[in-house]
Length: 339
Image (cartoon, rainbow, N blue to C red; front, top):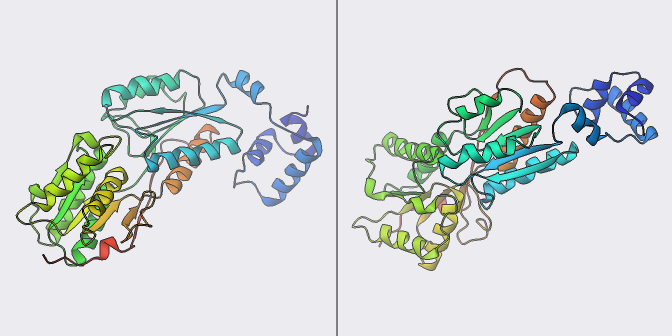
């Protein structure tokens, strides 16, 4: 069986260059890439992952820790990173963190102890200093939210900015009574989106009414598992003396339940914007206007940074903020209804 060094010798390049070609490194010139790929094909070269594992003392796998694999957002992140890992001949181990901060350290370290080569974490706890004991032995990238009390690479979005953008969009269509529905502000993303919701109202000269801010810890992790809770929430909001004419769903799982509840109540005239897309959102009538979280783009950027760190091509932590788009589909463009 041909080795990486055999390929390098015949191609007249270094073994590192062969590795970069195999891993599709964009920094390799097309001329060099073509020459090395021709030699690989001629020698029927395949990397010996078992030998690599023994040599490096690490598994040919990366770990991914997310709050909930049932969330369409995190499911897409896992699927995308897994595809990137497979292209490098690596496997993926996945664990769920739930929303209990006390469980994060235990579950992340369980993956770390598998001698994985890299780690992707969407943290739920307010402190990731427990990772300091691992030093730089396992390259780690935080996705969707930044780490706390530790320096680390991260790829995330500006939750406050985009929540404010969603609410400002509703305001631009004449709405002043806008409800906020989310899980719980113990989660940093919900906390920031609530801040964005309030800042958009303030910027428009609209006093925020806490009676329109509906947050329920039962929605953490799994959203509206019980459809009756979604129905109760919608009825509770619509029964207010001054009912909202629009609703902002603070995450995709909550929005899925709310959209269904609004349709069951035959209240399609209520304007609605979701922070995050979800299955069938574009098939409803009206279709749901969303802040597209672009989980695939987020995951690809996260994977690129992780693999660069694993290959020793990045020195020090890297932070990237992904800009999101508001997709108009109809529900967010409805005018205030008149009773």
